[in-house]
Length: 612
Image (cartoon, rainbow, N blue to C red):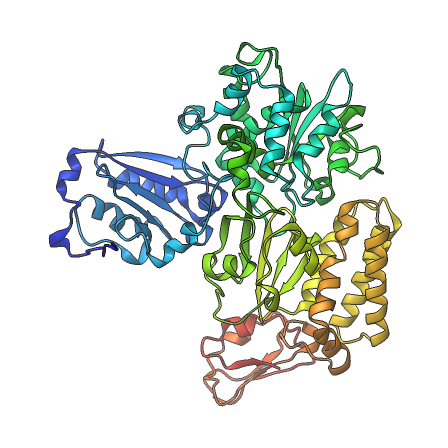
């Protein structure tokens, strides 16, 4: 039965008797929480609470990024509350309610065990968290908390039961786990290639080089649950016979590097890492390699080159890294999310994991929701859920109230899926059929204020700048594509340019050396496929329907609305606005001078600026 939250202070069960017992307060301190002010909130909580009344803990990001700063409060009687959008001022009312003073801040409430059907709770309720099972639930710097939640049971099971390497591989094969880094290659198959190689040394590498704009899946896992990734590396290393490993983590992720480094130290102290782990014959040494931020190092052969101390550039395959990888030795590179799933699979069994998802795509997938989405953040859902369910039922639909137009899946290497195809199920084959890719899990939502031509230009600009330059088609082809897109966005393009763009995109896709070069044209090809009319409007009508492309729009002042407050003139960086303050009807914009920066539009509080 649904229980209403009673905000009547006379019936408030959180009486002053709470002062006689402890309750638990959990503060989210992932990168997103810290950026939103979690440390100030934490200090405010500590200053409000009487000494000894509550236990205060910090955890990684719970994924509710649109509500940061987020805190949880767990009462001793089992009641459980989650609050969001907290700051050092409004957190006082939340804490005082739980001390028995005042009404509950219902506008800040995300979830309540008294009202589990609370609308905001949809964000969490529709998820199935396996890879993210511990993120936001434990202190990522505490190995004890990880072990209390079943951590390191998987590697103990393997070593104590003397499971063979074949047993471990077969368990992962039964699970149907595919690589979560983008390609979707079966994990067990990749392992078998390296396992069957004879070598004096093998390497296991964690690929934490997450470079997609709008993606933060790996960061949140490395920050919020580093031990699960480390234990996953142990399992993978045992399966292939690796004795050495590298966690390749972007240097732009300082908290992830810090927490993972501590996990290594603590794991060694507990004999989960190093020589003769837990008294067995299995030994595994692990180092962190910080990446310098090159997008191409997300490609495994470029990542391996970087580990070796060389410039991160892809290598021709075959030989594949599982045969000849780091320092010429058999090497398996697994993504962060892939590794985080492994301990759960070993403890619960591959069959249990395979029950999630579909026949073609087993298990769950983590997505980073970003863009024009009401409830942005980190979500984990079973394979087979539709894009529409993720965006509308979990993500809450449009943040702006404007119609959602498309979603970019797979980052710069992915493609745009139009709203008409949102009933596509989340599986590798079905997503690929749209022209996009699953990728590592970026899902950027766009409303009708997004120009699809400009979007394609943005992503192509990113991949062109990030190209390592090794192969001609990627290095020069992407540059020529960007030049054509710039020309179209400026209203100087021709229909012949459009034909050249599509032809060149297909040539780059077919002829580039590595997967990143081969997928770089995807944003162009998918926008041409689903939104070609916008390209044609840019060329033939010199029009940008989203009013984004600066060379195709003009700002003007609606004289009847203007109150001559002078704010627009003050913010104009090029002095394109003329008028006399307080003289209504006197203000105008000189479009020969105006650079269409939009500052006047953003500043005018009465909406007297229009874009045509």
